[in-house]
Length: 274
Image 1 (tube, helix red, strand yellow):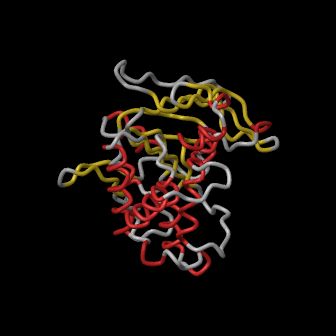
Image 2 (cartoon, helix red, strand yellow; image 1 turned 120 degrees about the vertical axis):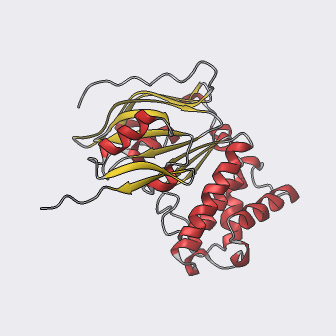
């Protein structure tokens, strides 16, 4: 468990958006990540997957620089520069975060919540510009949340709230977006809309890294990181055979990866007869 892991090298032509080396995270005496190393390709969508307790969200928070400094060690680079060397505002423009159960004032209306995503682009105490307002409207429309822009966040359902918070993350217009279980509370049509949004972001040059439990959605990504027990077991192209084998193994072969009508899917294995 304590074995140090090294990032699996990407092809020589691939640019790296985020890189971690020998990242270890502790919570008290418990070790949550055991010397993890990853290289996440730029302008691609990476899905981080694995069973509960694998360390997926812990890794994502470390990549975002959100782990308390005393709780972790190792190296993280964002766009080729050590994360710690980035000026705070520049990092906030380059790296956008959508987390679980984010603490946001429930009294704020949805429009103002999304406007918070524009803060890294604004001068201190400066009012929002016309461009800021245009971006906020575009993001609310993209996430199909425009109709409740004037409603307080506390009055929204879980799915509606999640779409507003996604709009806030998009409003940063960051080069790299990190999303921790972004599909929580979203029904299947809005999960599909989220996937289309991510694919559009990647097509326009952005990098997306998402922790997902929905394997059917994760299998549509470009790159995959498979985790178990605080370690990275495999990372590589999502559609590669060795990635599928690692995914099946980490779920104890209770799923099998098959292509149906051109899409990769995770299907439950047939229950063995007694």
